[in-house]
Image 1: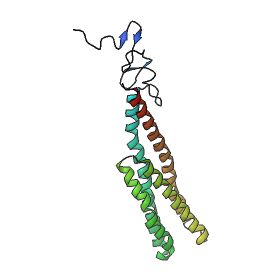
Image 2 (image 1 turned 135 degrees about the horizontal axis):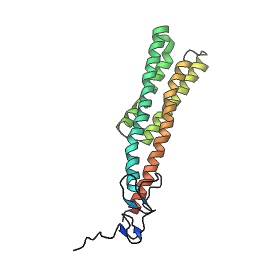
Image 3 (image 1 turned 90 degrees about the vertical axis):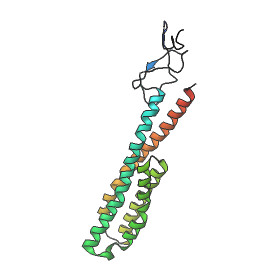
Image 4 (image 1 turned 45 degrees about the horizontal axis):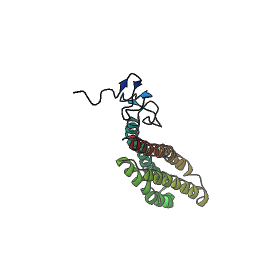
Length: 192
């Protein structure tokens, strides 16, 4: 009795796609080694079949999410440190409004950072990042316009580094999630 898969992968006319045996293979996946046709190639990651491209993309998502999470979690830590130093040097009256803004406002990035530490979430990344940036802008406005001093500006500019870095990582996470959705759709369409 002959093997039903004999002749699927290689015949006189060349190699055939692992998923579409009637189609000639155009490439070999550099990750799994399967032959694949043009339809089974990953559209975003050249050299990989769609299955491997999806696996690589999915493996990258938690790392990107953790990168955003750490940056969002650093912001409240920096804010608490900045307020503590100001209170120690100038007394508690110097940070009344800023402390209220810090305690209440920085809970949003903290919550979003914790959510991202659990797993990828584009909405949590954007909410936390934009919330952090908004709070930095509010702090700068309060410090410059309402107080008329630049005492807190250096602290706030230092605080803005983490949200700006989180903004870049949030763009990367969004692109990766969109790519993963596209790759999942390609895999679903190509599997008979």
